[in-house]
Image 1: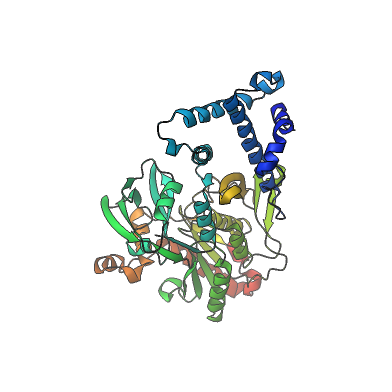
Image 2: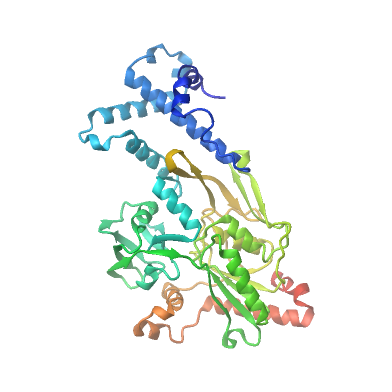
Amino acid sequence: MAPPFYRLLIRRFQPLWRCRGLVGGETRDQTPGNESRRIALENGAFLSRGLLFAAYVFGSGALWAAEPEAVKESPAYTPLGMFAKALQLIRQDYVDESKVSYASLVGSALKGMLSSLDPHCQFLEPKDYKAVQDDTQSRFSGVGLVLTQKDGRLAVVTVMEGSPGLRAGILPGDQLFKVGGQLTEKMTVNDAAALLRGEAGQPVKLVIYRPSTKETREVEVQRESIKVTTVRDVKMISGEVAGEAKIGYVRLTQFNTTTAAELSSALEDLEKRGMQALVLDLRGNPGGLLEAAIEVAAQFLPAGSQVVSTEGRVASQARVYRTPENAQPRPAYPMAVLVNGGSASAAEILAGALKDLRRAVLVGETTFGKGSVQSVIPLQDGAAIRLTTAKYYTPGKQVIHEHGVAPTIRAVLPQDQERLVALQRREELLDEREKAEIAGFRDAQLERAADTLKAVVLYTAKNGTQEQSGAAGLRK
């Protein structure tokens, strides 16, 4: 039920709002299944109308004293009044009139309001909202860095394949000290991302610090329109590592609208080559679209299998996500999934489902622990807010957020070896010194996964068909 002052507001000012398009349901998202978005939009509309009322009252000095005591006792009365008073004073007295438009002041207030909640909440101006839409469709102009906050610094989680950042030699774990001449010390991830994006062909200077070597260097990177290929390094693992077993290898760099189709083609190729087991590498995968992770899971799990569930403050946020009932999973060949601290979000959802449903063993290190739901809710004039509305839970009811997904087999790579793994992934871009560094290097996590699968392939050969015992061997 609306607070008393809001009901009074409706009675007195509804005609004005109707004229201005603030009442009448224009903000509701009518897409099926978006009840939570509708509620969030209505709450936002309530807040904006309340602020308009407060600003009107403070600006005119009228009616305030005449409001009933029930209004003044509302918990929203004092904070909204304080906000409206501050807005009035800034508009009236701030020295630079060009900076005090309602659009800029309210936009700044929304940015502060959302960033105070958690690092993932954000006010998206129209250009930022369009960038988010382009990102999920696998196209945007930038340098290809995925960032996070670590120990008060902006750190690189992943460098996208084929990106300018990769060609510039930037590696996971590098810290970003400056972007375009601006210090990043007080920047959020979103602030830095906005500076890194731009028109294709435009350069941006970065100052990078590498903790492993204590080296600081400046690089100039040319922005490009990046088309992300999310499935990489499709191959059969060499006999030196796999022995007589035919073990396939696929690396997923992130999850977007093309991932499931790309993976399906890769698996078909490996199956034609006689693959008996699979290593799925999710190390350094920062996540992406939930729908894409479910589509990938459907290729390995029975139809109708629970992949993940969500729980939030309101009942509409409690949902269970399953593989489609008409999904056609592939043969149940044994699987190992490689994970590390750079595996986040959708990568953790997939890894958690495959682990809890005993479809694969996880090898490596505990994942990042980014398991909260961000709803992108459109506002007026092309803007939007990104709001945390729920948390993800694995099929075994393990919370992912701030905990991560623990591996079945723990295998830790020292930081210097993580750097060599990253160098291996960009071998065609290495100079002679770097090629000498990785010569003879063996990926201990990959070899541990291959050793596990070799044992399962042997078990399968002795005890039944792949369909009957391939997954069973991993449950032991």
